[in-house]
Length: 130
Image 1: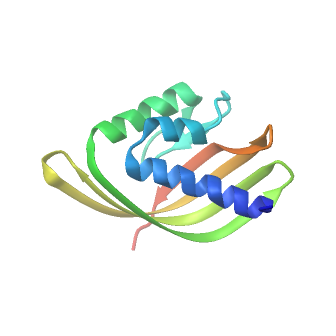
Image 2 (image 1 turned 180 degrees about the vertical axis):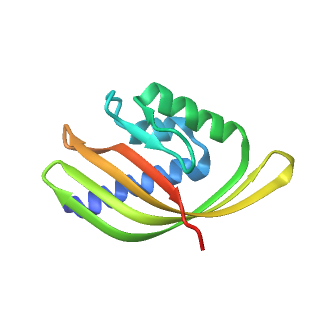
């Protein structure tokens, strides 16, 4: 049986798969639906609660023709029913008019175990300036 660390990493991977595939249903399966959920995209205001978070992901997916995301995990911490993953996101995004954007972000992803499953409750990405 997988340990908590492996299960948290699996939930984290599911988040990035849904992001890359622009799959809102898969993204919805990863996120908690609690009003305490928080999502902060690089350079944007904080979004609180799944309805606002979902709307932002739908907008990103609609305006993006291609996404590729590689991650470098820096740390995984688990304490009881709470966990977080800190990582670097290396993102290649192609949007309207074939506009190409390559960006690096430092991200923190928070998870909470509910009914035996790990759900994302927090995502915060900040640009890395080289």
